[in-house]
Length: 384
Image (tube, rainbow, N blue to C red; front, side, top):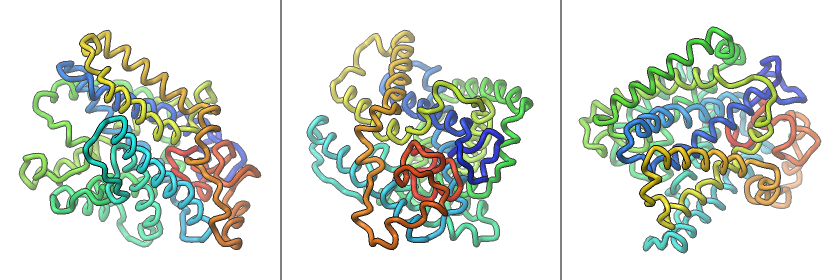
Protein backbone atom coordinates (compact mmCIF):
# COMPACT_ATOMS: atom_id res chain seq x y z
CA UNK A 1 0.00 0.00 0.00
CA UNK A 2 2.12 3.08 0.84
CA UNK A 3 4.58 5.53 -0.43
CA UNK A 4 6.64 8.55 0.15
CA UNK A 5 5.78 11.55 2.37
CA UNK A 6 5.47 13.73 -0.68
CA UNK A 7 2.53 11.69 -1.87
CA UNK A 8 4.71 10.13 -4.50
CA UNK A 9 2.84 6.91 -4.29
CA UNK A 10 3.80 6.00 -7.78
CA UNK A 11 7.55 6.44 -7.46
CA UNK A 12 9.96 3.77 -6.42
CA UNK A 13 11.71 5.19 -3.43
CA UNK A 14 13.63 4.21 -0.34
CA UNK A 15 11.13 5.18 2.32
CA UNK A 16 7.51 4.42 2.90
CA UNK A 17 4.74 6.94 2.95
CA UNK A 18 3.28 6.75 6.47
CA UNK A 19 -0.13 7.68 5.04
CA UNK A 20 -0.73 4.23 3.57
CA UNK A 21 0.64 2.40 6.59
CA UNK A 22 -1.64 4.45 8.84
CA UNK A 23 -4.56 3.66 6.53
CA UNK A 24 -3.83 -0.06 6.66
CA UNK A 25 -3.61 -0.08 10.43
CA UNK A 26 -6.89 1.79 10.88
CA UNK A 27 -8.60 -0.42 8.31
CA UNK A 28 -7.47 -3.64 9.98
CA UNK A 29 -8.83 -2.31 13.27
CA UNK A 30 -12.18 -1.81 11.54
CA UNK A 31 -12.03 -5.38 10.23
CA UNK A 32 -11.47 -6.71 13.75
CA UNK A 33 -14.26 -4.52 15.11
CA UNK A 34 -16.68 -5.83 12.51
CA UNK A 35 -15.88 -9.45 13.34
CA UNK A 36 -16.17 -8.81 17.08
CA UNK A 37 -19.39 -6.80 16.84
CA UNK A 38 -21.29 -9.46 14.89
CA UNK A 39 -21.90 -11.82 17.85
CA UNK A 40 -23.06 -9.05 20.24
CA UNK A 41 -24.92 -6.55 18.08
CA UNK A 42 -28.35 -8.20 18.05
CA UNK A 43 -30.84 -5.79 19.57
CA UNK A 44 -28.40 -2.88 19.49
CA UNK A 45 -29.67 -0.81 16.59
CA UNK A 46 -26.84 1.70 16.67
CA UNK A 47 -24.20 -1.04 16.63
CA UNK A 48 -25.96 -2.85 13.79
CA UNK A 49 -26.07 0.37 11.80
CA UNK A 50 -22.39 1.07 12.45
CA UNK A 51 -21.60 -2.53 11.47
CA UNK A 52 -23.34 -2.10 8.11
CA UNK A 53 -21.52 1.18 7.47
CA UNK A 54 -18.12 -0.32 8.34
CA UNK A 55 -18.77 -3.33 6.13
CA UNK A 56 -19.68 -1.04 3.27
CA UNK A 57 -16.13 0.29 2.99
CA UNK A 58 -13.49 -1.42 5.13
CA UNK A 59 -12.71 -4.33 2.77
CA UNK A 60 -13.28 -2.19 -0.36
CA UNK A 61 -10.60 0.14 1.02
CA UNK A 62 -8.13 -2.73 1.25
CA UNK A 63 -9.10 -4.01 -2.19
CA UNK A 64 -8.81 -0.59 -3.85
CA UNK A 65 -5.34 -0.04 -2.41
CA UNK A 66 -4.35 -3.58 -3.37
CA UNK A 67 -5.33 -2.74 -6.93
CA UNK A 68 -3.41 0.52 -6.81
CA UNK A 69 -0.21 -1.29 -5.88
CA UNK A 70 -0.80 -3.98 -8.49
CA UNK A 71 -0.63 -1.53 -11.39
CA UNK A 72 2.81 -2.72 -12.46
CA UNK A 73 2.21 -6.41 -11.87
CA UNK A 74 3.14 -8.68 -14.76
CA UNK A 75 3.81 -12.38 -15.13
CA UNK A 76 7.57 -12.26 -14.77
CA UNK A 77 8.92 -15.30 -12.86
CA UNK A 78 10.25 -13.20 -9.98
CA UNK A 79 6.84 -11.64 -9.38
CA UNK A 80 4.98 -14.92 -9.75
CA UNK A 81 7.36 -16.38 -7.19
CA UNK A 82 6.49 -13.67 -4.68
CA UNK A 83 2.80 -14.09 -5.48
CA UNK A 84 3.11 -17.77 -4.59
CA UNK A 85 5.10 -17.24 -1.39
CA UNK A 86 3.17 -14.17 -0.27
CA UNK A 87 -0.39 -15.17 -1.15
CA UNK A 88 -0.78 -18.82 -2.19
CA UNK A 89 1.31 -20.38 0.58
CA UNK A 90 -0.33 -18.36 3.39
CA UNK A 91 -3.72 -19.24 1.90
CA UNK A 92 -2.98 -22.97 1.98
CA UNK A 93 -1.54 -22.77 5.50
CA UNK A 94 -4.31 -20.69 7.04
CA UNK A 95 -7.19 -22.36 5.20
CA UNK A 96 -5.93 -25.66 6.60
CA UNK A 97 -5.32 -24.18 10.06
CA UNK A 98 -8.77 -22.60 10.27
CA UNK A 99 -10.42 -25.83 9.11
CA UNK A 100 -8.61 -27.81 11.82
CA UNK A 101 -9.44 -25.11 14.38
CA UNK A 102 -13.11 -25.40 13.43
CA UNK A 103 -13.01 -29.18 13.86
CA UNK A 104 -10.99 -29.54 17.06
CA UNK A 105 -11.89 -26.34 18.91
CA UNK A 106 -15.30 -25.61 17.43
CA UNK A 107 -16.30 -29.29 17.53
CA UNK A 108 -17.64 -29.03 14.00
CA UNK A 109 -19.03 -32.17 12.43
CA UNK A 110 -17.70 -31.04 9.07
CA UNK A 111 -14.21 -32.52 8.89
CA UNK A 112 -13.61 -31.56 5.28
CA UNK A 113 -10.61 -29.43 4.37
CA UNK A 114 -11.18 -27.93 0.94
CA UNK A 115 -8.83 -25.42 -0.60
CA UNK A 116 -11.53 -24.68 -3.17
CA UNK A 117 -13.95 -23.35 -0.57
CA UNK A 118 -12.33 -20.57 1.49
CA UNK A 119 -13.67 -20.45 5.02
CA UNK A 120 -14.13 -17.33 7.11
CA UNK A 121 -11.53 -14.66 6.33
CA UNK A 122 -9.22 -16.67 4.05
CA UNK A 123 -11.36 -15.65 1.08
CA UNK A 124 -9.31 -12.46 0.73
CA UNK A 125 -6.09 -14.33 -0.09
CA UNK A 126 -7.89 -16.47 -2.65
CA UNK A 127 -9.45 -13.37 -4.18
CA UNK A 128 -6.17 -11.45 -4.15
CA UNK A 129 -4.46 -14.22 -6.11
CA UNK A 130 -7.19 -14.20 -8.76
CA UNK A 131 -7.26 -10.41 -9.01
CA UNK A 132 -3.48 -10.11 -9.17
CA UNK A 133 -3.08 -12.77 -11.87
CA UNK A 134 -5.71 -11.04 -14.00
CA UNK A 135 -4.23 -7.56 -13.50
CA UNK A 136 -2.36 -7.59 -16.85
CA UNK A 137 -5.64 -8.36 -18.62
CA UNK A 138 -7.35 -5.27 -17.20
CA UNK A 139 -4.60 -3.10 -18.62
CA UNK A 140 -5.61 -4.24 -22.11
CA UNK A 141 -9.33 -3.53 -21.74
CA UNK A 142 -10.59 -0.20 -23.06
CA UNK A 143 -13.12 0.42 -20.27
CA UNK A 144 -11.95 -1.87 -17.46
CA UNK A 145 -14.11 -0.47 -14.66
CA UNK A 146 -17.31 -0.73 -16.71
CA UNK A 147 -16.47 -4.32 -17.66
CA UNK A 148 -15.68 -5.21 -14.03
CA UNK A 149 -18.98 -3.73 -12.87
CA UNK A 150 -20.78 -5.74 -15.54
CA UNK A 151 -19.13 -8.93 -14.32
CA UNK A 152 -20.03 -8.08 -10.71
CA UNK A 153 -23.65 -7.49 -11.68
CA UNK A 154 -23.78 -10.84 -13.48
CA UNK A 155 -22.33 -12.53 -10.38
CA UNK A 156 -25.08 -10.95 -8.28
CA UNK A 157 -27.75 -12.79 -10.30
CA UNK A 158 -25.97 -16.14 -10.64
CA UNK A 159 -26.94 -18.40 -7.72
CA UNK A 160 -25.62 -21.44 -9.60
CA UNK A 161 -22.09 -20.07 -9.26
CA UNK A 162 -21.86 -21.69 -5.84
CA UNK A 163 -19.08 -21.32 -3.31
CA UNK A 164 -16.07 -22.62 -5.22
CA UNK A 165 -13.18 -20.21 -4.59
CA UNK A 166 -15.84 -17.89 -3.14
CA UNK A 167 -16.32 -16.63 -6.69
CA UNK A 168 -19.48 -14.60 -5.98
CA UNK A 169 -17.53 -12.47 -3.51
CA UNK A 170 -14.37 -12.40 -5.65
CA UNK A 171 -16.33 -11.06 -8.62
CA UNK A 172 -18.49 -8.62 -6.66
CA UNK A 173 -15.38 -7.04 -5.11
CA UNK A 174 -13.61 -7.06 -8.48
CA UNK A 175 -14.67 -3.49 -9.43
CA UNK A 176 -12.88 -2.18 -6.33
CA UNK A 177 -9.66 -3.88 -7.39
CA UNK A 178 -9.97 -2.64 -10.97
CA UNK A 179 -10.68 0.86 -9.69
CA UNK A 180 -7.43 0.66 -7.76
CA UNK A 181 -5.63 -0.34 -10.95
CA UNK A 182 -7.01 2.77 -12.64
CA UNK A 183 -6.01 5.19 -9.88
CA UNK A 184 -2.94 7.41 -9.95
CA UNK A 185 -1.00 9.09 -7.11
CA UNK A 186 -2.74 12.40 -7.81
CA UNK A 187 -6.09 10.83 -6.96
CA UNK A 188 -4.84 10.10 -3.45
CA UNK A 189 -3.53 13.63 -3.19
CA UNK A 190 -7.07 14.87 -3.81
CA UNK A 191 -8.53 13.03 -0.82
CA UNK A 192 -5.69 14.19 1.41
CA UNK A 193 -6.58 17.85 1.00
CA UNK A 194 -8.06 19.81 3.89
CA UNK A 195 -11.32 20.35 2.00
CA UNK A 196 -11.77 16.58 1.69
CA UNK A 197 -11.26 16.15 5.44
CA UNK A 198 -13.90 18.76 6.16
CA UNK A 199 -16.39 16.97 3.92
CA UNK A 200 -15.57 13.50 5.28
CA UNK A 201 -16.90 14.12 8.79
CA UNK A 202 -20.47 15.09 7.83
CA UNK A 203 -20.55 12.33 5.19
CA UNK A 204 -19.74 9.73 7.84
CA UNK A 205 -22.32 11.27 10.16
CA UNK A 206 -24.98 10.95 7.46
CA UNK A 207 -23.83 7.40 6.68
CA UNK A 208 -24.17 6.37 10.34
CA UNK A 209 -27.62 7.93 10.48
CA UNK A 210 -28.62 6.11 7.31
CA UNK A 211 -27.18 2.89 8.71
CA UNK A 212 -29.25 3.28 11.88
CA UNK A 213 -32.40 4.12 9.88
CA UNK A 214 -32.11 1.14 7.50
CA UNK A 215 -31.42 -1.53 10.13
CA UNK A 216 -35.02 -2.86 10.25
CA UNK A 217 -35.27 -3.19 6.47
CA UNK A 218 -31.74 -3.97 5.24
CA UNK A 219 -30.59 -7.56 4.93
CA UNK A 220 -27.05 -7.37 6.30
CA UNK A 221 -25.97 -10.14 3.93
CA UNK A 222 -25.93 -7.59 1.11
CA UNK A 223 -22.81 -5.90 2.49
CA UNK A 224 -20.92 -9.20 2.47
CA UNK A 225 -21.23 -9.35 -1.35
CA UNK A 226 -20.91 -13.13 -1.25
CA UNK A 227 -24.10 -14.35 -2.87
CA UNK A 228 -26.71 -13.79 -5.52
CA UNK A 229 -29.87 -11.75 -5.04
CA UNK A 230 -31.97 -14.90 -5.30
CA UNK A 231 -30.04 -16.42 -2.38
CA UNK A 232 -31.18 -13.49 -0.25
CA UNK A 233 -34.82 -13.89 -1.20
CA UNK A 234 -34.76 -10.77 -3.38
CA UNK A 235 -35.84 -10.41 -7.02
CA UNK A 236 -33.04 -10.88 -9.55
CA UNK A 237 -32.97 -7.22 -10.56
CA UNK A 238 -32.07 -6.21 -7.00
CA UNK A 239 -28.64 -7.78 -7.48
CA UNK A 240 -27.30 -5.37 -10.12
CA UNK A 241 -28.91 -2.42 -8.36
CA UNK A 242 -27.24 -3.31 -5.06
CA UNK A 243 -23.89 -3.88 -6.78
CA UNK A 244 -23.99 -0.34 -8.14
CA UNK A 245 -25.25 1.18 -4.88
CA UNK A 246 -22.69 -0.65 -2.76
CA UNK A 247 -19.88 0.24 -5.15
CA UNK A 248 -20.84 3.91 -5.07
CA UNK A 249 -21.14 3.83 -1.29
CA UNK A 250 -17.85 2.00 -0.84
CA UNK A 251 -15.98 4.46 -3.07
CA UNK A 252 -17.49 7.46 -1.28
CA UNK A 253 -16.81 6.13 2.21
CA UNK A 254 -13.35 4.87 1.30
CA UNK A 255 -12.51 8.34 0.03
CA UNK A 256 -13.79 9.86 3.28
CA UNK A 257 -11.89 7.29 5.32
CA UNK A 258 -8.64 8.07 3.49
CA UNK A 259 -9.30 11.79 3.92
CA UNK A 260 -9.29 11.31 7.70
CA UNK A 261 -6.14 9.16 7.77
CA UNK A 262 -3.14 11.09 9.18
CA UNK A 263 -0.34 11.61 6.69
CA UNK A 264 2.45 11.94 9.26
CA UNK A 265 4.40 9.22 11.00
CA UNK A 266 2.65 8.12 14.20
CA UNK A 267 2.90 5.41 16.84
CA UNK A 268 0.71 3.14 14.71
CA UNK A 269 2.59 3.63 11.45
CA UNK A 270 4.93 0.68 11.98
CA UNK A 271 1.93 -1.49 12.83
CA UNK A 272 0.62 -0.82 9.34
CA UNK A 273 3.47 -2.93 7.98
CA UNK A 274 2.09 -6.01 9.76
CA UNK A 275 -1.59 -5.88 8.94
CA UNK A 276 -1.62 -9.24 7.15
CA UNK A 277 -0.57 -10.82 10.43
CA UNK A 278 -3.37 -9.05 12.27
CA UNK A 279 -5.85 -10.05 9.59
CA UNK A 280 -4.97 -13.74 9.46
CA UNK A 281 -4.47 -14.24 13.21
CA UNK A 282 -7.31 -12.28 14.78
CA UNK A 283 -9.84 -14.74 13.38
CA UNK A 284 -8.54 -17.44 15.73
CA UNK A 285 -9.20 -15.15 18.68
CA UNK A 286 -12.69 -14.21 17.51
CA UNK A 287 -13.66 -17.81 16.74
CA UNK A 288 -12.05 -19.06 19.95
CA UNK A 289 -14.13 -16.66 22.04
CA UNK A 290 -17.22 -17.62 20.04
CA UNK A 291 -16.62 -21.36 20.51
CA UNK A 292 -16.03 -20.83 24.24
CA UNK A 293 -19.46 -19.19 24.50
CA UNK A 294 -18.11 -15.98 25.99
CA UNK A 295 -20.00 -13.84 23.50
CA UNK A 296 -23.21 -15.18 25.04
CA UNK A 297 -22.50 -13.37 28.31
CA UNK A 298 -25.53 -11.15 28.86
CA UNK A 299 -23.74 -7.92 29.78
CA UNK A 300 -21.73 -7.97 26.54
CA UNK A 301 -24.99 -7.34 24.69
CA UNK A 302 -25.53 -4.08 26.54
CA UNK A 303 -23.95 -0.73 25.55
CA UNK A 304 -21.13 -1.06 28.08
CA UNK A 305 -20.41 -4.58 26.87
CA UNK A 306 -20.28 -3.43 23.26
CA UNK A 307 -17.79 -0.75 24.28
CA UNK A 308 -15.62 -3.32 26.06
CA UNK A 309 -15.71 -5.62 23.03
CA UNK A 310 -14.70 -2.69 20.82
CA UNK A 311 -11.73 -1.73 22.99
CA UNK A 312 -10.53 -5.32 23.42
CA UNK A 313 -10.84 -6.06 19.69
CA UNK A 314 -8.91 -2.92 18.73
CA UNK A 315 -6.21 -3.65 21.29
CA UNK A 316 -6.00 -7.32 20.35
CA UNK A 317 -5.53 -6.78 16.63
CA UNK A 318 -2.98 -4.07 17.41
CA UNK A 319 -0.90 -6.58 19.37
CA UNK A 320 -1.11 -9.06 16.50
CA UNK A 321 0.49 -6.49 14.18
CA UNK A 322 3.54 -5.96 16.40
CA UNK A 323 7.10 -7.06 15.63
CA UNK A 324 7.27 -9.93 18.18
CA UNK A 325 4.16 -11.56 16.71
CA UNK A 326 5.43 -11.06 13.18
CA UNK A 327 8.73 -12.66 14.17
CA UNK A 328 6.95 -15.79 15.38
CA UNK A 329 4.61 -16.22 12.43
CA UNK A 330 6.76 -14.91 9.58
CA UNK A 331 7.60 -18.47 8.54
CA UNK A 332 3.99 -19.05 7.45
CA UNK A 333 2.89 -15.53 6.51
CA UNK A 334 6.01 -14.44 4.63
CA UNK A 335 7.99 -17.65 4.13
CA UNK A 336 11.44 -17.73 2.60
CA UNK A 337 11.12 -20.38 -0.09
CA UNK A 338 14.02 -19.88 -2.47
CA UNK A 339 14.66 -23.62 -2.13
CA UNK A 340 11.34 -24.34 -3.87
CA UNK A 341 12.15 -22.44 -7.06
CA UNK A 342 14.61 -22.79 -9.86
CA UNK A 343 17.75 -20.80 -9.28
CA UNK A 344 17.13 -18.39 -12.17
CA UNK A 345 13.88 -17.20 -10.51
CA UNK A 346 14.70 -17.57 -6.82
CA UNK A 347 17.02 -14.61 -6.70
CA UNK A 348 15.83 -12.51 -9.60
CA UNK A 349 13.93 -9.29 -9.48
CA UNK A 350 15.20 -8.00 -6.18
CA UNK A 351 16.79 -4.85 -7.46
CA UNK A 352 14.45 -4.19 -10.33
CA UNK A 353 11.37 -4.62 -8.19
CA UNK A 354 12.37 -1.85 -5.82
CA UNK A 355 13.14 -4.16 -2.92
CA UNK A 356 15.43 -3.24 -0.13
CA UNK A 357 18.44 -5.25 0.89
CA UNK A 358 16.42 -7.26 3.39
CA UNK A 359 14.83 -10.63 2.86
CA UNK A 360 12.70 -10.87 -0.29
CA UNK A 361 9.24 -9.68 0.59
CA UNK A 362 10.19 -8.89 4.16
CA UNK A 363 7.69 -6.76 6.00
CA UNK A 364 10.24 -4.26 7.23
CA UNK A 365 11.81 -3.18 3.97
CA UNK A 366 10.96 -0.03 2.14
CA UNK A 367 8.69 -1.14 -0.62
CA UNK A 368 6.42 -4.11 -1.12
CA UNK A 369 2.85 -2.91 -1.20
CA UNK A 370 4.31 0.47 -0.55
CA UNK A 371 5.83 0.46 -3.97
CA UNK A 372 4.43 -0.14 -7.38
CA UNK A 373 6.56 -2.97 -8.68
CA UNK A 374 7.39 -4.29 -5.25
CA UNK A 375 3.74 -4.87 -4.53
CA UNK A 376 3.62 -7.53 -7.15
CA UNK A 377 4.30 -10.39 -4.82
CA UNK A 378 2.59 -9.67 -1.53
CA UNK A 379 -0.86 -9.13 -0.15
CA UNK A 380 -0.61 -5.51 -1.18
CA UNK A 381 -3.18 -3.86 0.99
CA UNK A 382 -2.56 -6.04 4.00
CA UNK A 383 0.95 -7.35 4.00
CA UNK A 384 3.24 -4.42 4.58
